[in-house]
Image (cartoon, rainbow, N blue to C red; front, side):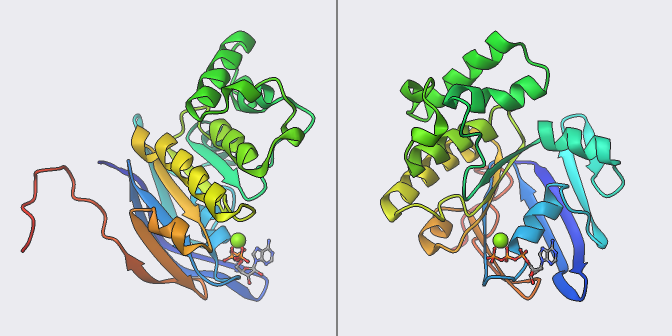
Amino acid sequence: MRTLIEARGLTKTFGATPALRGVDLDVSTGESVAVMGPSGSGKTTLLHVLAGITRPDAGTVRLHRGAGVVDLGAAGEKRRSELRRTSFGFVFQQGLLVPELTVLENVALPLLLNGVARTDAAAEALRLLASLGIGETGERRVGELSGGQQQRVAIARAQAVRPAVVFADEPTGALDSVTSGEVMTALLASTVNSGRALIVVTHDEAVAARCGRVLRMRDGMVVAESGAPAPAAAGEQEPVR
Ligand SMILES: Nc1ncnc2c1ncn2[C@@H]1O[C@H](COP(=O)(O)OP(=O)(O)OP(=O)(O)O)[C@@H](O)[C@H]1O
Ligand SMILES: [Mg+2]
């Protein structure tokens, strides 16, 4: 495990509304972190600040990449946009897929935006779809798929660029509990099991229970955290009895 994201002292106020009031968070490779809390407690804002979509009023987000450390706050818009396209994947409640495009085209889109050749992008998209058990849907339009299938397409698309971190904002919010469990299995398999980190906002305790750590937010602060980060490497620490 190595550190991917180091966030310190994050604050963000919209007008007179404080959304974040001093959040610290470290996330390492292979970790899954659930973010829970009442509506308006700052979960989405935290996700957007960590992903470089929203600039915090104060505090820092450092992203550790193979090539070094990037301070998201100090990075310009162009650099932040490049990081979002290459280091991060996103899955939302309603997949934000393009309904007029085929499944394959939706998954290939981020690769095309990153300059990958069309045939290579299509081959990679098909491989990802097959790994999520929906390879046969490639030629269909997204609008024809079930909710659970659409979320798998969104998961495939989120990992197309092999991001370090996948952010998911209520990815199972519109699904029944069985489908929700299946989508979580797919999401964990495609992130944590591949050495990526997953940060998932959810209102569902069953979804949170699948994650290694659970942060509970209230009024813009993390008020509780359960599930300690895993030790640095297996076998390094003796279990405490
Ligand atoms: N773009 C914005 N402009 C103004 N206020 C905002 C904006 N985004 C968030 N807020 C406010 O900041 C606070 C935190 O919002 P946030 O969306 O982070 O909550 P949340 O925990 O994700 O809630 P939910 O569970 O309903 O999605 C809320 O009071 C919200 O109204
Ligand atoms: Mg939200």
